[in-house]
Length: 480
Ligand SMILES: Cc1cc2nc3c(=O)[nH]c(=O)nc-3n(C[C@H](O)[C@H](O)[C@H](O)COP(=O)(O)OP(=O)(O)OC[C@H]3O[C@@H](n4cnc5c(N)ncnc54)[C@H](O)[C@@H]3O)c2cc1C
Ligand SMILES: NC(=O)c1ccc[n+]([C@@H]2O[C@H](COP(=O)([O-])OP(=O)(O)OC[C@H]3O[C@@H](n4cnc5c(N)ncnc54)[C@H](O)[C@@H]3O)[C@@H](O)[C@H]2O)c1
Image 1 (cartoon, helix red, strand yellow):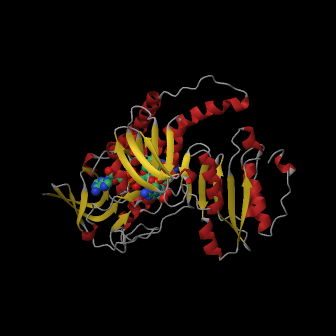
Image 2: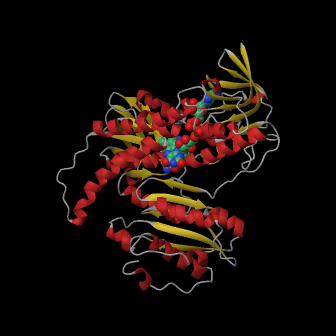
Image 3: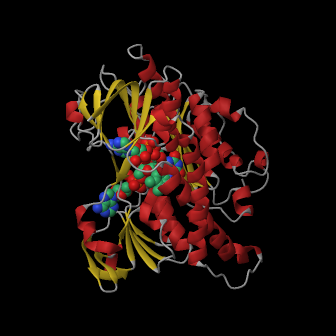
């Protein structure tokens, strides 16, 4: 085995690995960024970007389908599946190329190819040929789809997100297992592009929604478009000549058998840490074999090992991976003088239609933190002026505030423009604004944000701070 020594080794050249690299480089040039597969990041290759491209095509198709509501008739709507998939890949490849260009601009001597595994706390094997001694190590190995074993019976018709984007054409039908964020985003997009979709869940949850009222509303809304049973009883999955046969209980119809072209497994993801021989790293692991770490420093115990991005299974989102990589890379550079980095207010958006935004504390966390002393303000978007104008008037927003202090703590939204309103709410939560502070901000007319104002007014009244909400208040013009 060849031997090499560096100050900092970073395992994984995804989003977290790359931000760790930039942060670590401020401390030393003796760095190794190790990648076992292709450059380009999961986000660009098979995650955020291709999924949003597929959703964009679905939005275009849906816009044509709903145009007659405005008196506009586009004629026959035809979805060319091959063209849809070709654009997804073409645009995806541009995103990937720009990331690859960035990584390849790093000095060749600082880049190593091959799977890394621990030999001990300061030594890694890279493939079979290289032993790398590193004073500090950042684990940024990402995650992969978790597929329950019974789904393997779908054989060659079993897909995960990675495979979907490689299809030459849209299939006729897909059974989606897992109504989490990936299942909902991809399943709804496929459905809007004319694919017959049926979605099977297990736990009863709908996407990332934790507020029961919003969950129920979202479930009803999705079921208007495609069949979604969040707590399905599936008795068998089988590859047949015609595709994948799924047997399941379907309400009053009892046991039903339906055949699909493909089965898409969107049943959660697992961190890529099992191949790292972590038992040799001398760090404490939890019951699932995941390293115990401090989420503010990303340090594993008091060791010189740090873990960032999906690999630590904390908040598997792109902006969190980028933040964590930066903190881990910086702390690897300054070890043992590690520092807490900025962890932002939790914000997540699912790009369904209506979109889902979750901000700050969940309703259960609010309840726990405030010991029941909180209030919930609410608004429906069904009669909200701007939402009706656009014909996008479905949705519900619930905002949480603390009794006594009047502090805004968190929110969940299923509704129009949730990607934007989610940001406003996250910024307010991070600035520790009270609900009154938020209501002091300007609101234009007519905009979806007027719905947010209605929810905040409702909350302020329930916190015994603001006046009772007046129906049809003239602040908002008609229909707010
Ligand atoms: C379909 C889908 C859609 C998504 N959409 C969104 C979205 O809209 N918004 C959002 O915020 N997030 C989204 N996410 C989540 C987001 O993509 C991830 O949280 C983020 O990309 C994780 O980055 P990472 O750096 O941790 O992992 P990655 O980018 O996966 O990087 C990990 C790297 O480590 C390498 N590696 C693994 N093991 C080893 C080893 N032993 N040795 C060397 N290298 C190794 C891998 O090959 C990989 O290149 C989506 C995810 C999916 C799957
Ligand atoms: N827009 C975004 O920001 C975005 C988009 C996609 C993914 N992501 C990230 O990727 C992560 C992973 O997404 P995901 O959707 O794979 O995971 P998830 O954990 O969000 O959802 C998995 C779903 O599968 C269900 N499930 C598990 N086993 C099942 C079974 N046997 N049968 C039926 N259903 C089953 C779970 O109950 C859950 O509803 C998310 O947590 C999110 O952080 C983010």
